[in-house]
Every structure is written in structure tokens, then in C-alpha cells.
Image (tube, rainbow, N blue to C red):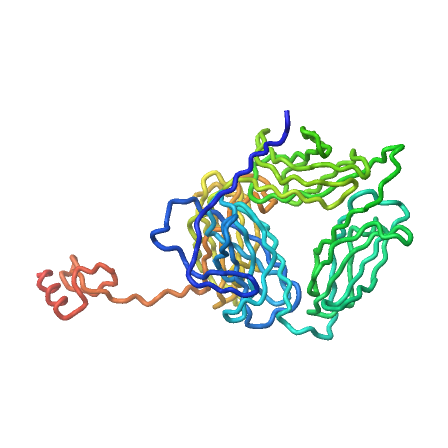
Length: 487
């Protein structure tokens, strides 16, 4: 019996629309949902990072844009805070659980779209979504930068072959060879001495003597950058008198949480065959590596990965055709398991001023029934966790309390998530974050506004009240009526 279920379901959900921007082929709508469009849905969160490549001009904005899978229109759903020189963290809690979305980030200068990132498809809830934004908004400078990444080699690689990397400025005609390395070294590559903000085109090449036996596509990149990918397949056919063994390896990416003790099964079949066979089983941990050493060099395989929870097939990754040997093959699996985010913000109590001038603040997290771990994120700006980023075991009390130290008069941003597992180290095993609490110590309370008069039953006198539904209006007539009612 085949391991793989071939049914694939796509979901269609709700949209947002008001104002449209069209630049560089990007269509982004700003706005909210009409009241008539509202319906009962289960909300879910999507989160990740924006990897900024190049130089961003001050005053620019990053906007997260999403659209339902297989639709045309992108909707702008939130601004993303970022610091120059750092990756930007984002989280959107307006998704519908089980809905498949396409996500990208757009760089705006004023209301003009400057550029946009790659587009990633994911089913909510989803975490660790990586968006790469190559920016030429800034001006190239004399400062040096580095571009690095991974070279994915597949097919039969002769022992005497060499890998070379070639680069050129965008717009130039000729590539220049800048790096020579053996295929074993070619898994990782780096180009240094580049101009900060410069736009380059890079390609890889597999050489066997004077003959080119493999070549990657051309990669366009803005310096600095890291984590770039060059893919290359060897055209060499080995001697068929003896089959030479080869290894295929890669990683697993999980979108969403999993149950404890869940596993991922790696499956393979010869191209053209019907049934899959299991070649590896690994723990269901996002980013885990896998390897299969039973392949035959230069042979083509169809491979996929299946997530198993409680011993049953839960969801499956996409099928890939792979020529052995090969590395860095990544299977992306949507877990389709949803944890409701906490509905309540954390609560805070500013307790006392410390000798250092900071304040001791107690954060209180509302208990989630059955949760075994909590994840507290405390940052100096929205979406950041640069102050506290801790995961703690549930105390068993009605509330989970944590004490933090915060500078006097500075705003802090607190939110939390939860998990049902005892050792919730993988981030995908947590819910999406709660709404964010913005606070500072000492706490600033608004001055109460008098709303009207009430009759004090002890003194039989009319007194002012801040209750919004005051019995008597805060007018001279209201006071006279109150006095008459108190007699």
C-alpha cells in the first residue's frame, strides 16, 4: 500500500480592500473588511522574519502584504518595525485557521512601492516564514560587504571535477571567475570585497578539465546578503558496469505545531514507479536534518516527507524529483494543527523602584487550560523580544507570574504564547502570540472625569461620581434633581 495520499486541498478565505497601489507589477490594497463581509472564523497567527539585503533609506516603510491562495489581489495588513542593519520580525494574527495564504513584504517610500520580497505560501497557523528583501533603495558606497550561501549539487560528481563561482555587476556583459573550490567545499560559498548596496549577478559552474558539465542559474543579489542558494546538476553519466552508491540529504521545515513524539518519515521511489518506500524517520522538529545513503549515483528519484502524529499520517510535503547524489533538499510540511492564541493581553503591576533606577514589574499571564509551557516576549518596540525572550514551565496556579526589571518611564511591549508539551523548544510547538500589552513604570492612569452626581446613602448628600452611567447629569439641573432625591 502506498505511503502517500495524493489528495491536496486548497482553501479560500476572506479578503481586505480599500486603496490600491500599482508599481512594478505589485498590487497592494490598504483597508479593512466591510461589516457585511464578517463571518464566524477561527483566527490564527502567522509569523516570521524579513531578511534585509542591501541598504534601506531612512523614512522607508515595510508593509506585510497577503492574499488568499490562488487569488490575484495582495492586501496590506500591517506595518513591520525594523532597525537598520537587522532582520525584521513580524507577526500577523488576522489569518483564518486552515486557510492557505501567499505572503510577501513590500518596501514603501511614502506611498510609492520601491520593491518587494519573495512570495511564500503557507497555511495558517504558520511560523518561521522567511522573506528576503533585496533593497537598492540606498546608495552604493565605498564600504565593503559580503555575499554568502549554499551550493546545491545533484547528479554524479566526478572526483576530478571542480566548482567555480562567477560574478558581475548588474548590467555588465562579462562574468569574472572569483572562486575555485572542490565539490566537497562547494556546499558553502562566500564572496567578499563587494560594494555595500551594490547589485550583483552570481552563477556557479561545475568543470571537468576544460569541459563545463554543470551550471546554475544566474542569481541576482544586493550586497550584503547571506543564505543565498545556487542550484546545479551534473550532466556526467557514470560507468554503468557497477552501480555507485550515493547519498541524498536535506532538512525538514514544519509550518505549525506538532504533538509530542511526532515523527517525519522520508519516502522515496524510482521515477516511474508507483509505491513509495520509507528510507528515514526523524523527530518532528523544525530544521531537523535527514540523510539517505542507499541511493545510486545518477539515478532519478521522486521523494517526499510525511508527518506522523500519534502513529497516523497527518500531512505531507510536496514531491521533489532528485538526481543522486544531492544535498540541501528541503521538505516543507504544513502541520494543519491549530492552537488558539491567548485572547487576553498580559497584565502588569509596577511594584517598586529599585536602587538602579529601574522598576520591578510583575507580569501576569492568564492561565491557558492544559498548557505546560509559556513563552514570554518583552521588547523595546512592537514585535521585538530584545528585553525578555524566555520560556517557562507552567506553575499550575490560576495565573502565571513573572517579575522583570524595566527602565523608568520607557515603554515596553509584552505578549505571550503557550504550548502543550513539556519540552517546547521548537518555536512551532507554541500557539501564536497574544495581543500586545504596552506599558511603562510607574503606571500612568488617566485622570478620572466626573460624569455626574449620585446620592450618598450614608450622608444623604449629593456627591460627584466618575461612573459613566451617573444617576444625575453633571449640570445645575442634575444637581437640583439629585438634592431633591436625597431628601
